[in-house]
Image 1 (tube, helix red, strand yellow):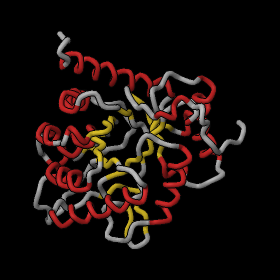
Image 2 (cartoon, rainbow, N blue to C red):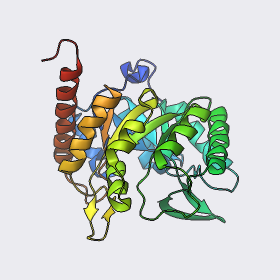
Image 3 (cartoon, rainbow, N blue to C red):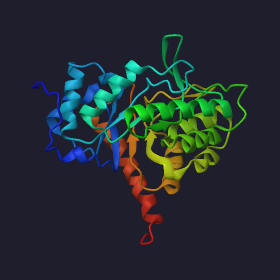
Length: 293
């Protein structure tokens, strides 16, 4: 593969039209994507993996970007931390954004670092008015620096803070409305948290601000007996498919993405999961259409 560090100005995908059901871009599939150019509407790149310049991974990203629309999804903003924003991280992200021109940049409504230590996990927040104000301020700073709206994802959780004084869905509405960011609605995460904390997944889902949803995530979890663990290592389960259909009815025709990060199967299997999501999405949308049956 020839070295490349620019996106072609003649690239038809520079318009960044994201639609249909995409999949996560994973290193396991780089070669087959390059060789076969599969029929994938778009890829979501884990932006943290491409922040270093002059690497083979970044070079692959440039090549794939010339054939497909791309979105960025990260875990490194630590938007919920009480420490100052990591400006070195944001500068690298902005440079990568300027070069690759993703349709949007997303991260998680959580914190991932404290006292200089990166947890490599998505730690949930106490849902309070003060925390919401803190998050809003940090999102506004990030959006101002990057020069665009960002997209924030709800996370799975296994424990809850005693300090919490509002529901997670009320907290999300508070944050998105006051920061004017977009929402990445992870349906699997809603289901996992609902089962772990014994709340109504439908109530959570239908409380989401549909007009702010830019993307839906789907993934598989593991049942540990005492709790569900969001591992992204399994196919989407039937209860999550059912919740997804309700999500489509609620938010309409927004882009959908299949996440498969562990025990990654061949690309063909991930594409089957993507095709299933699109089939369900189109079935719901056809019923909702004035011309549907």
